[in-house]
Image (cartoon, rainbow, N blue to C red; front, top):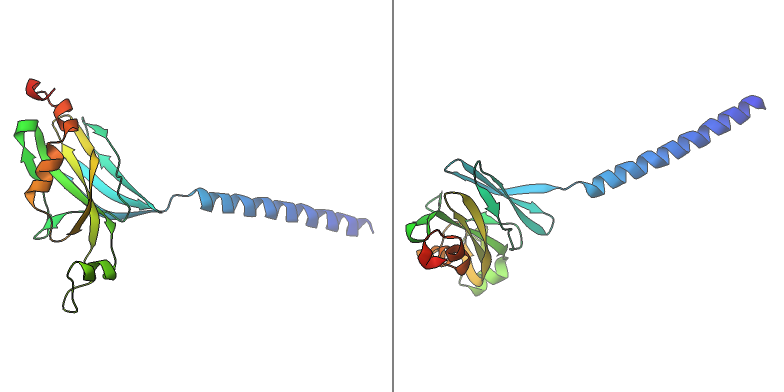
Length: 184
């Protein structure tokens, strides 16, 4: 009888331990961020990673000696705009921007692609979206623009007109941060 009591007590302790371990495992899985890298790019010693964290888009920027400002406001997954296989970039010395990049988000499915002219001969696997946001690289900072252009159907692999890059580089937030007294 004594041994049966000890055996029952040890089973109860194992059951409690097992429940605690199960709770720890579930909590850990719930708290883990499952980040998916959707696109990467490097320029001037700065590494960019566009990440998808559930229904949130994030950007990770590794840049020495530069202040990083701003967040991605688009719905994931997000991608850099490219033309001819290369990430598009434009410089605007008048506002001290060495590189202007554009991120595509708010991706769309086949129905929207059809609405914008895709037909049975087109590649429906192409990544297209309806929102873009700028990234400005300056001598001392990297700025993810506050401004987002929405309802602009764009495909990541065909890029965008330079006017959109110019527009992101020449917003009021850029002028305020410019060293040019004309734009302070």
